[in-house]
Length: 384
Image (tube, rainbow, N blue to C red):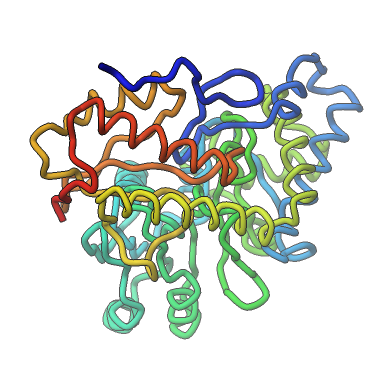
């Protein structure tokens, strides 16, 4: 007999809880911000947009030295705009790869006909700053280094600060994909040297999808004219438009921006990076300890695990079937993520979004129920 309870977990608007790395569960007030219409040239919208662009650099303590250049589209639009606008035609990028998003950056650069060098480690292994140092010393043609702050393929936290030190010591420029980390993991431009960082609206700031953005040093964007390989992804041209008119060059995702403005207000009210990151860290702790009590093992050790998304090994128990496991959690109001690894058969559960410790405890109770329904013994045996 099934132990399924008719009570489904749900957000405050009645939706399933998204235990994913984004899009993610948003607050009711963020959703409500989108129920009105604004004109893209109207003063009221322009004021909201200006406030968003002005306040974002504060998250990296970069006010005054960094500018925000928004880019319509998903986070990958922002990453591609950053890479193809800030790396000149004669530049060469050392791409640090330990997951899907490093590979995606390499593909972007290949299509843009930018020369690259590759330093790849397994998905559960961060890059070694000493190895980065050796590569840079051995190849003076390298002008830029690209690194992912939190690689959500596995959930690994890469040593951005140590990599930045090495890059600066060698007189090169650092470009950061902080898509899944921005707003939750500290990144301080006063102590960590980087030219630009790309992120998006639908991750740790807890907005909705549709807006990417790049925070870039003012002198760097000023010198990027003519680099872009695309009209719509030209960061310099987009920045110039805001400098001259305060407006987007092309139709902006207005409702996304207004929702993002509300999400930022809630982000600051929670205590900024410390508050938001602290809640996620507690969510992660509860999730990991609870899953381990059920017999699951994590891919990453605690010192490499970012509090964004956690990768778990598939169980050895023959009664465990991932699709049925996923469907059972979905029926109970929790949506998780399949794995993307080559190093291990796995699945992932996110800790970010408008989720609180009570939601993580509820998710763990649902996991236990589904395991019982599948006939899986608990604590189960891990495939680790």
